[in-house]
Amino acid sequence: MLLAAPTTLLAAAVTVLAALICLGTAMLVARTRNRHGIAPPAMTGCPEVERALRVQGNTVEQALIFLPLLWMAALYFQGWIPGIIGVIWCVGRILYAAGYMAEPKKREVGFAISAFSTLALAILAIIGISGAWIATAAS
Image (cartoon, rainbow, N blue to C red):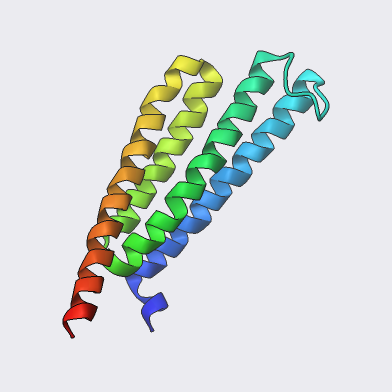
């Protein structure tokens, strides 16, 4: 069963971790709003709330790009590399959130880690899909 292969199981575990990171950023926004008494729909007025909102927004934006690339790389490139890169992406998002909440300039390392991870997955997906396409056309 393809989806029970260790490499796709790793991609599935990374997907759950990425979803939990997105959930964690939503909880960060709620906690930060409550701490500062900023009720929705207000989006401004407290720098810490604004940072939490940017952390959440950027993380969700990045996840929308990351997740399809993770799965295309896992299914077509195969091997452990896509899943390992996915774990690195998750670490990058956690560092991004922690850095941004401390001070906006400290977000750069985490952002770079996750951005390069996404780029690496795009390259693996392109290589894998191209190889599958060529193999299909040749048969």
